[in-house]
Amino acid sequence: MRIRRAIARGALRVTRWRLVGDVPKGGGILVGAPHTSQWDWVAMLMIAWANGVRPHVLVADRYFKGVVGWVLRRTGGIPLDRSSPGATVRALLAAAETDDAFQLVIAPEGTRSTGEFWKPGFYRISQQTGLPISLGFVDGPTRSLGMGPTFHPTGDVVADMDLVRAFYADKHGIRPDNRTEPRLREESADTPPDA
Image (cartoon, rainbow, N blue to C red; front, side, top):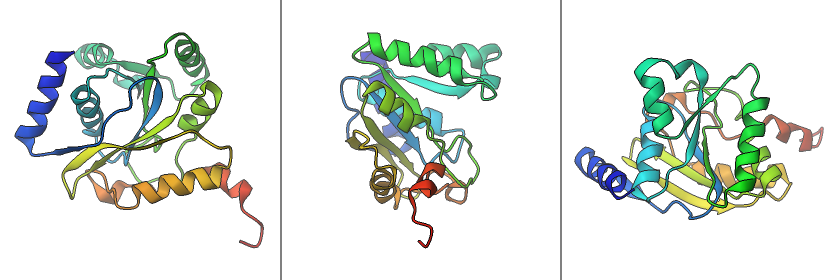
């Protein structure tokens, strides 16, 4: 782990990216956002490795071919079949129950292009496992990346997502035009009809 930490800190220094905050010790769901570039995976690894942790990362299964697949697996990548994610999620929930230090990185935007909503998996997995959610970020304009606040979902989706939106309000990703506003489809069910 010391070698990975040294590699990450050296790479950040050479590329002039500033690391902010610390990855919480112990188990948790690490949100990676805004997800606007293929480099976001590398950025989240640098954040984790610089903090001495090795989380699991959900990655679309189409990337797990050849050398790239080998590298993804060696760095904590878990293939996700987007057409049937249930089996993968059930396996992750089982792993979280048996490992107090289980950490999972999820990019809730689910795509590197602009979308309408975030996917709720990070929130649901946190509710099902009791693991806290920690907000990780990449911000190209300030050349900073790192970790922000950690919280446990309260069940009030709108209030929880208001906290998430407040944190990401000034975080733009590597390609700001591809950013998706942090909003879950489930929030509209909590909104009064005349709002």
